[in-house]
Image (cartoon, rainbow, N blue to C red; front, side, top):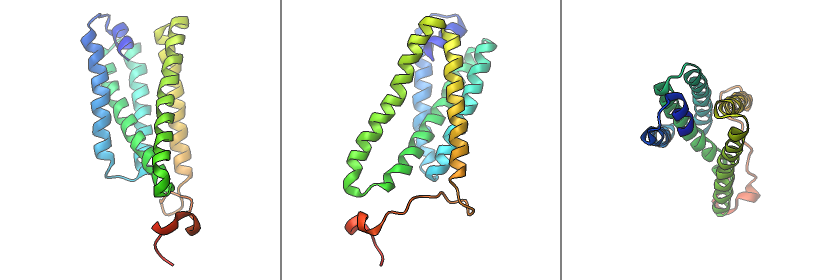
Length: 181
């Protein structure tokens, strides 16, 4: 985003790039604070919807050369990533027994870092080959596609009452922490 903002704004001001990163992280943390009050499903859907809005904002701001809109896109992206991250985390943690949660969290964070690092490295390589704006378009279409798919699949997993369908944990697997007959 800092490089894209630099190209759109036509400025070498490094503070602008830092501002986009700060906007992304602060809005991501803010989204997590608000998403805590909602279900994992609602957080995932809200995060995906925010990413759809973000990609549209980025496409528009690059096409119209609007640096402020690109900066606001960073805020919306942070909201999407924050809500989506918390929703994903809250959807998998309850599926693990307490003694398995440390391993689950380790795997979750490795997957999260890879899911961010690999596309970023690919985009860096692709930007050198075809250009930054063209790479941003491809990357944006990829994020847009995944976000739409997440909303569709997330809503397909709902039952008629609006509750998410979750696998039942057999009593034999959950050990002493399970309550009930």
